[in-house]
Length: 309
Image (cartoon, rainbow, N blue to C red; front, top):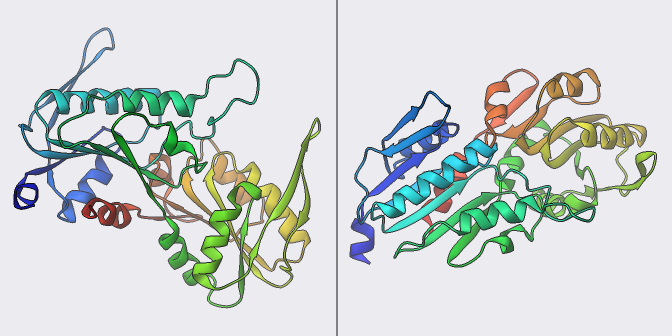
């Protein structure tokens, strides 16, 4: 136990998630590890660990936001192990491709599974590898990891409990965009001791239609949750149903603010929402923070998970 506690702890990151790594360092989780980066004339990337890691424990922060980010995470992890690291914790705040967790048509790649398999192929150090994952799109995704890799789920629910209490001090209902988020929203409602509401959808050749709202929301402030927001289409469709059911206000909540292109403008233009609350798991959310978009930091929850054995 004393040997384990005395090991040096270093924090490295992909270039995209350097800000999150810096915040973890500021909380005393570990010391910053140094990486030298080089891009060659033909576009190839070179990486070098400039901090000694032999027999140390390291934390590597990096979301699989793009293919380039994924490969950088993989290359850095392999370099750490090959340089004699004792134990590695991967902190993956945003696991990209998580919506591709099963094929919807014959021949489709289950990309969430292949990405988990890629990270599972990182050589296993003596002290093992664990992977911290935040609010995955599907609860079964951790089972895609193989071998000695130990996935650990980190829930952003405590952040949304705080956000909901701040935005809706009076009466409110916690709601979901679809049945897929039902368990999360039910747990959130239980934390807050309020009612939960769900929308029921039907997908057909004409698109997705909302058929019903499960709870009474007339005159209520609806706090509408989805695990991630891309274009905002799911949030808007659900919000329209809640507005028709008599909701007085609607505030959107999402763990992962992907928000490509004009997604924020689309949500704001709809006139349905008082605002959007997301975490900083995705770099795009950090870029858009302010005004309509409120960003709450996942770092304290990651720090707590990293301190846990």
